[in-house]
Length: 192
Image (cartoon, rainbow, N blue to C red; front, side, top):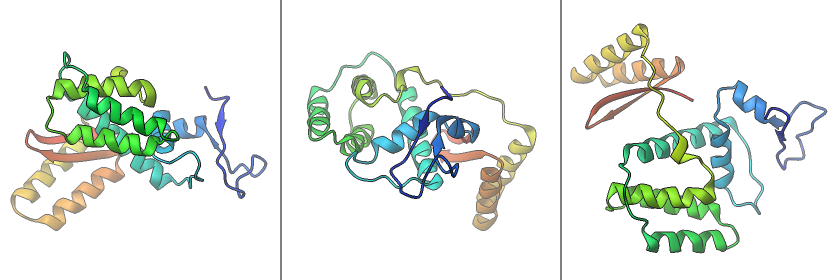
């Protein structure tokens, strides 16, 4: 896997300057290689893609949200053929993966049974290659010092001390954790 490298269409990038992107570089920096795939899918292949670490961070977060949604849905649904037809039209329209991804996010938000969303997305992922079916959420223990920050943030939120809560969220992010507030409570996850 580390023998392959990804060169970008940028005249400033060259192998001799060491200014090129290798798969091993992504892995060493803690990125899932599929986040790079997601980034590439979000751009049209005929347009020059401007690579940046912030863009890759955004792609990694979007992929993480998509994986989390997919994993939370039950199995046993039926494929929504209307959606698959629309998805196929976009792919067949000059390999418009960016528009196909936009449709996928529309599917996630549709008022369709979650099991049907999962079956439909599983079918579409055969084209996208994001490995959604094989991804499993990481169930790691939250370190005590991180949990203490999460608890302090929750206390600040309850006291309506929004600036303090935001500062604690930022501290968690610098330590490699993200916090999501939802109907089911607070979800803490390692970034990456």
